[in-house]
Image (cartoon, rainbow, N blue to C red; front, side, top):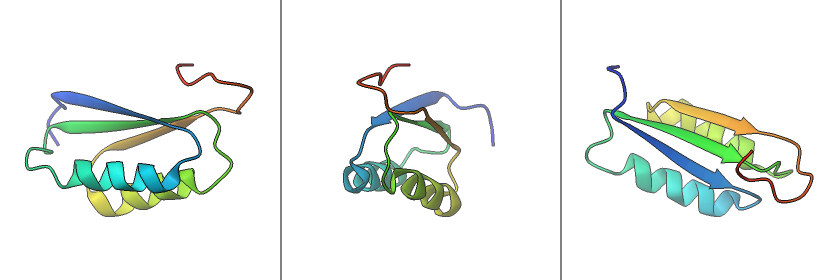
Length: 77
């Protein structure tokens, strides 16, 4: 894949259903060939990581998942 033109950051915390819909919407766009997706998680203890890993395996898009332990609202860390 060529170097991405756009990096899309998706921030999430304990909303795997919403995340699943956001990722599906991104994959459904017509110009996703020069796009990278960074999913940042504020320490969700649910199936958020599974949603991202499943998307990584099926979308064919470059996806990076970053998380840290939840110790209060620190979404931007």
